[in-house]
Image 1 (cartoon, rainbow, N blue to C red):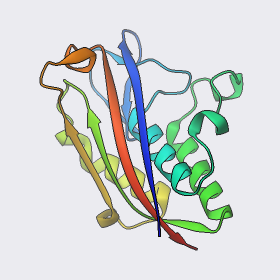
Image 2: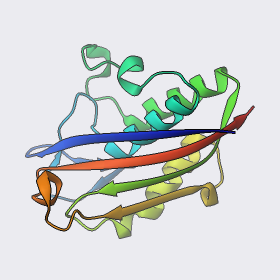
Image 3: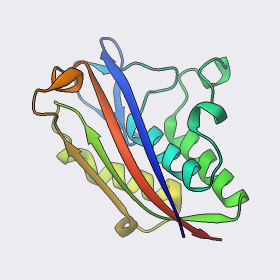
Length: 157
């Protein structure tokens, strides 16, 4: 078994949708980034790539490449999963946390879990997604951005 850790952070800005776990979450701001800036899926992708020793998401989908402008992070995650499978590993489980002051994400967690489960090809009970705030502390607590942390395990394919 192999273990990987992923982390991502993006600024909150006006005039962008807030996409988390492949779900558009109603909010007055969205995350800034070259793709759809889905911090949750980016952290999970980095965890998978790290566990397989395949680099990071920026190596596979550089923000300097216009081909990835506005890219759907579910598609990026599915590509990462294929790379992991090509390296003869299979996703086993993932545990991830989004840190965002608001909005509350509880109503969207199950839809996010379904998206991640489908993209990884694992049962939903192998996907744990949580949300928390930063209790008003730092840039995240001041609603300037969002971050996500993810841990995953891979098993030989």
